Image (cartoon, rainbow, N blue to C red; front, side):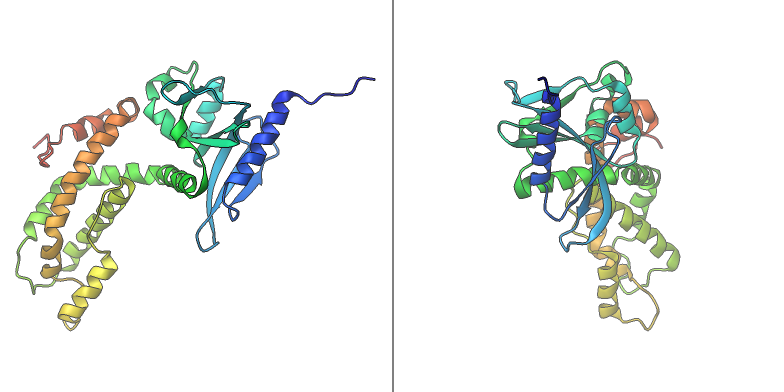
Length: 299
């Protein structure tokens, strides 16, 4: 009597899901989907260190191999993903990750889809075949794996805000530099008027976000800390939230950060050359022509 046989691929898929479930933190939530024909196997909701639901979701595609045969440069190329599926992933507003399971070794490797697409945009735009290359070092294991995943997740989660802040930085760069020069070594007890204060807060917010996103060290205190320190030094009888002393104290750091952000943006955009030349060549050409000393390419 013949009985139905379970396909080998179905067994591997189940094994990869069990492995994935066993590797993620216990507090994180897997939300399964009923339709898996569109390149998504499940949603993953991140839970913070205080066990609070964040509402931050990642979309997960699971791939499995009985045994991953790594190349000499410790990479493995995942082929066979339909270009329509990659297009779908690229257009989604939620970060998508591919997790590749080695069933024999019980190891799991991850790759951020949009990061890979933006870094290989020329091949992607050909709209023929598009492969994903995994690094052996991208293993998802323990606290280090969770840290790397969260880093990559928030890199994509805040990507649109980054592009907005990048444009804000570029359109205001000359004004930032003038503002920093204007408030260097002024009479320390003068209060900052509301117009300058609003501009300073916008600059502070922009620099703080870009430093965080680009992983740059930023020694400048938060606005709340600056204002608190200012009140402790000068009191609030004149109804100023900040004084020139506060700006003078940190203007050198702002000038330093301006140059560091410029250098990092040039490197960042170079790494996504084809992407930026496709979506906004004006921004790319402007950034790479800014001098490392902050001199702008156009008067």
